[in-house]
Image 1 (cartoon, rainbow over the protein chains, first blue to last red):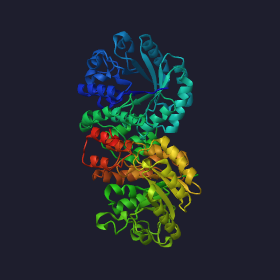
Image 2: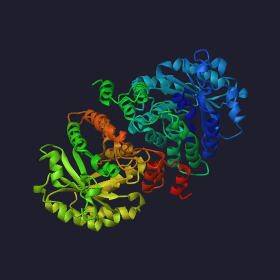
Image 3: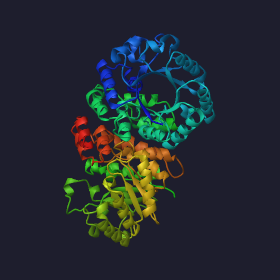
Length: 312
Length: 312
C-alpha cells in the first residue's frame, strides 16, 4: 500500500504556542507542504467555542471555514486538508459543515479507548456529511491489550477510513510499534488505513514511524522540525530523507521552511524537542505535563523526577 | 549472548571539549558507571605524544597509566577499562604497556577499511601484551559491500575479540543496521563479539543500538546524555531504560550524574546533540565537520547546506 504523509505542525505544534501562528507562517507552511509533496495538511482543531474562549487561543484551535479559506482559497491542489476533533471538546454537529460547503477533506477524531461510543457517533456524523474520517485512539500505553482490542473491534465495524496507532506519551519501542501496527491492521484494517502518530520523548519518533511504515502503516504523521507538544514528533525532514526524493516527494522545501520560519519561533522562545525530563515521562508511561513544567521553568532535579516517574 | 554496555563518554565526548574534563567529572563518571552496572568504561585515546602536543589537549587524549591510576587505583571492580587507539595516530608499541603493568583491559583499534593491515599488526601486538581487543571499522557508509566483506574477512582471521559496526556519519537506518549486524556476525563473528557504535545525526542512535542488540550485537556503546562529536551518540540513560532495571543495571546513577555534572558542561557552552545541520550531513553520508562548523558559528543557511550535501 502506498503511504501518505500527513503534516500536523499547526495542530500538534499549536499545543506549544496556543495556536498563535502568524498568517505568514501558515501560508509559508501550506506552500512548503505543497512543494514537498505532503499528502495531507492538518490545520488545527475543531474545538468548541462554548468550552474554549477564542480570545485565549489562536484561530487554529477552532479552524473556522473562513479562516481556512483565507489561506487555501478553494484548495484546488492535490493536497488534502484535515482537522482534528477531540471527543468531548467539540460541537461537531454544529461546527462541522456539509462537505460541499467546506475545504476540509478529513476529520480526525481523537478519543481515549473508553470513549469509542461517542467517537463512533462522530464518525457517523462526519461520514454522512461527506468527509474522510480517522479514529486516533490516544494514550494506549496505559490500556490493556483487551481494552485496545475492544476499541479496534468497535472501529472495525464503523465507517471510519483510518485508525491510528498513537504513542501519546512517547513510551513505545520499535518492536512494540511493530506489534501494535500489525495488531491494528489485523483487527481493524478491513478496508481502512492504519496510521502512526509518534512522540519523541525517547528520541524514537522517527524510528517508530519508519518501523510502522515497514509494517504496513499507510498514514504517517510528521511535523516540521518535529514541532509538537513536549518532545515533539517525527520531523517531516527526517521522513522525507528516508523516503528519498522522487517525482512525488521533495525534502528541500521543508528545509527552506525551517530556515525561514521555524527558526523565528525558536528564537522567540517557543520550546519543544527532546530533553531528559521527556525521556523520563516517556520511560514511565506518564503524560508529559510534568516534563513540560520542568523544561519551561528550567528545573533540573532529574533524579527526583526519575523516582517520581518510576515510582521508585 | 548476554550484552555488555560500554560507556565512551570521555572518548567520544572528549572530541567535543578537546578532552578537558575536570578530575571531579571523571571521578564522578567512574562512580556513576560502577553503580549503574556499566561493563566497560572507555577513558579516552592512546594518541601519539609525538604527533599531538600534550599542551593542546586534556590528558584523556593520551590516557597515561599514571593518569588512569589516579582515578581508578588498581580498579578492583567488575567494570573493565578500555582505551581507543587510531591506526596511524598512536605509538602503540611504545605506549601500550604489558597488561600486567596496566589497569587497561581492552584496546579498541579504530581504522578505515583500507587500513586493516596495520590494524591487524596492532591487534597482534595488543593480544601478545595481554589485552582484549576490538577492531572498529570506521565510516563504512562510504565503503562498498566488497570492501566491507574484505575487511571482515581479515578480522575473522585475527585474534581480535570483537569487531564493531560503526556508523561514523550517522547515516544508517535501522534496517541497514540489522543487515550490517547480521553480516558482521556471519563473516567475522566466529568466536568474537560484534559491537555497535551509533551516531545521532538522524536521531537514530538509540534506535539503531537496540536494533543491533536484537540482532545479536553484544557490545553496546553509549555516552551519558549522548555526549559525543556533533550529534552525539546513544545515551546511556536511553539504553538503560530500555534494558530495564535489574540486579545488574540501574539507570538512576546516570540520571544523577547528568543532573550534577553534565549540565555544568552544557552551561559552560560545550555543544553536542541533534540539530538540523547534523541531519543533513547524515542524510548525505558526509563527515559531520561542516555541520559542526554550522552549529558552532550559529549558521542557519540550511537550504544551502542541503544542496551541498545532496549534490543537488
